[in-house]
Length: 204
Image (cartoon, rainbow, N blue to C red; front, top):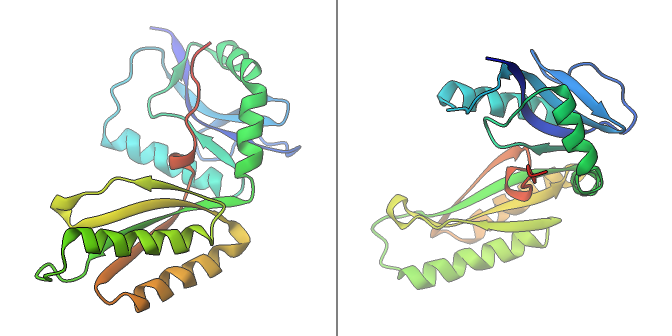
């Protein structure tokens, strides 16, 4: 069985020279892009909980310093040369994506019905939640809606791409929205790497 390289993500290094961005990883550089990778068997991957945690931990570490485009968990290239070819082929798209993400991070906001016994109808509650997300959208560079989960009580969720230097203001806006809507429990998590805003093209 040959040894390949598992890809965690692509970072915008912007002239920064480095050999590693997270523990037990190395960087494969193509101009100002750096692939965060580690040795792995070149075979079909079946990620378990530990792999998921490791993937998330590596990306969180990298995202603290650099714009990063996350790769799907378990993405393995045959060897360094194959990874370099893929980066060269997709260089311009990767660079454009990372330039857009540079200086930004992600918040996820989940809006939950505060009182399960409330008689407020679902449609009315969803409309209020949508108004909250619309207000928060004005505080962010971009937003993507996430799923609604009636069984868990989540009315509406969204992921927001936020300027790093406006993170405090966005957090305050979430708090103000919660104070203004007593019937909604507005929960924010983050900062996150931009999982919700990037889909790497692994073809070619």
